[in-house]
Image 1 (tube, protein in one colour):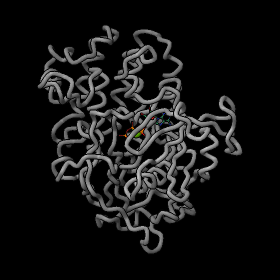
Image 2 (cartoon, helix red, strand yellow; image 1 turned 90 degrees about the vertical axis):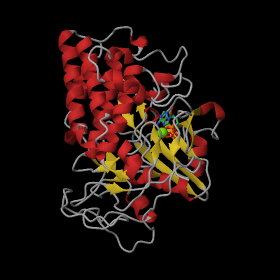
Image 3 (cartoon, protein in one colour; image 1 turned 60 degrees about the vertical axis):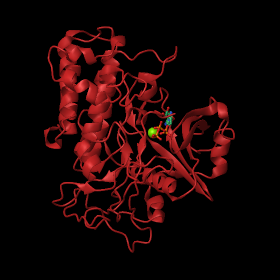
Amino acid sequence: MGNCLAVRIKAESPFHSASTSGTTSRNNSKNVNGLSGSSSKVSSTSVPPTPRSEGEILQSSNVKSFTFNDLRNATRNFRPDSVLGEGGFGSVFKGWIDEHTFVATKPGTGIVIAVKRLNQEGFQGHREWLAEVNYLGQLYHPNLVKLIGYCLEDEHRLLVYEFMPRGSLENHLFRRGSYFQPLSWNLRMKVSLGAARGLAFLHSAETKVIYRDFKTSNILLDSNYNAKLSDFGLAKDGPTGDKSHVSTRVMGTYGYAAPEYLATGHLTTKSDVYSFGVVLLEMLSGRRAVDKNRPSGEHNLVEWARPYLTSKRKFFRVLDSRLDGQYSLGGAQKAAALALQCLSSESRFRPTMDEVVSTLEQLQEAKDTTKSTPAQGNKDSNRKLANNGQRSRRRSSADVVNGKAAYPRPSAPSLSS
Ligand SMILES: Nc1ncnc2c1ncn2[C@@H]1O[C@H](COP(=O)(O)OP(=O)(O)OP(=O)(O)O)[C@@H](O)[C@H]1O
Ligand SMILES: [Mg+2]
């Protein structure tokens, strides 16, 4: 289950009308905020118009449409013992299907899938479901979780993902128990780099998406601790033309949202950078972004840590004692300085995600030149992915929908009255 202490921020947000006439491309259309685009970086060859209505999103996505029965069979009737986790959207179940035919197979055969089932009534959940199909149905990158398909049947709304064997970063950082050993320093750095590459890809000129819900429960890990971002229900197209930001109602999760976004509703890629800083700080400290169980004065991680992070002599007090000194002081200092920079109150002082990726790569390289670790093989495979553009692409020549707003989770308590 998601971090029960990380309360979602709720607000109404407009969504483009499904009845919007005609099809438009993100780069030449107006969205709900009246932003207009100009040039297109997307290949000009046979680019289908960007879908805008629900039917168009579903038709153009490159994923499989499952029947409810398919997924009931794949999860053995949504057996309680196959629940992988629960979040604001609903429960996530483990299932098995044949890789080629997508037909349900016996547990242990075929490929493993994660099936997320919306358990809430109403339009908000549907909007979030649709945003996920819209973005993950078109974006492909090694650091984004792969959407295999969806189900839309009567009142049923489900999403089918590749199964991520090591679950969420949240579980690894904060769950206690024999299965969840404290993550080593090297793994924390590896996960940070993977997640940073995922965000950098989203922010790239080619993609231009603001993720808006960057937090540890949305970072999933494969068997080699490669990080992949999931949950695009709140994602939003970045500003186009000469606009510097997108205006939205405030949504996201307390503890992770950037101060200027909370104050004004102005959303930029730098809002994601702030959230990245919070997650990096969670990894360095082993503390949750918001934790009411800590002594007063320590509930909010950023507020508590900031005075230490600004001091070269005191920054180490922030570091997780379970790391047991596995880091070099210089490396830890650089990582702490990076977190502090991402958490700058003024967004213009925050680095871009490309800059964050470079810094984390340098940290990785410094580590690898001082000693050869078992993670060496992983480093090499990561290297091939270092250039975001190289192995990432949209799943089709179709562009991302414009004019799409995000949607609050129905159960989320409201920030504003
Ligand atoms: N593809 C997947 N493979 C393996 N486990 C998954 C997968 N997707 C989700 N999970 C598990 O299910 C849990 C619930 O995920 P979900 O995205 O519904 O909620 P959340 O991220 O915890 O909270 P929120 O609703 O605030 O986003 C995750 O924390 C993770 O442990
Ligand atoms: Mg999630």
